[in-house]
Length: 230
Image 1 (cartoon, rainbow, N blue to C red):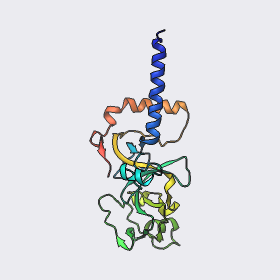
Image 2 (tube, one colour):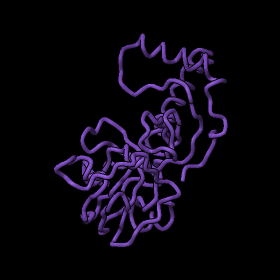
Image 3 (cartoon, rainbow, N blue to C red):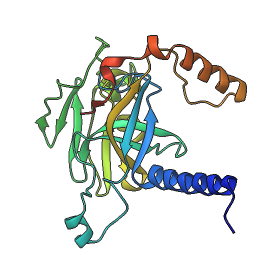
Image 4 (cartoon, helix red, strand yellow):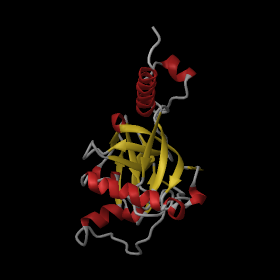
């Protein structure tokens, strides 16, 4: 007996859903930027493709020789679950790996006592310099941190917008098991209103979708479309 057209469509949709779920979990995932902590590298409203395969699950020595798998390296822009709120995904730049000693002195980054030339991506928009913890403990950690050594299996991550980033200077080292993937490229950049990621009901969600659709042409930053992330 021939299968009905409706059943064939249903089976095709189920297979497609399974494939997309598998792809989103293990290979590539989408992510959008809700805050300015990675400016100017990533702007609020940038939508990214994330390579989830490169930092894939623990592999054998043979698999690591054959497949393009590796751990995060200095300079990688990584997406990870927040150490403080694991249900929240964050994006930062990995600046140090296990065994490295990190410090900042008057906003300047040092790895293993060597000054890091991060002028190509790091920005400082706050002219104030906090050096006395009694004036501002948070500010002092922002501008003068460490030295601290990164434990094995951990990473030290910072936002490129150094004066406006809540990162490893405040919440500590990033464990390897919280890392989800590496940012690949921007597939769409929305210069209009962008959700902050908080759920405020279906009505608010539909309103956001409607405003995004209405302003798609005028609000899209076309010059950022398909830009590789470095």
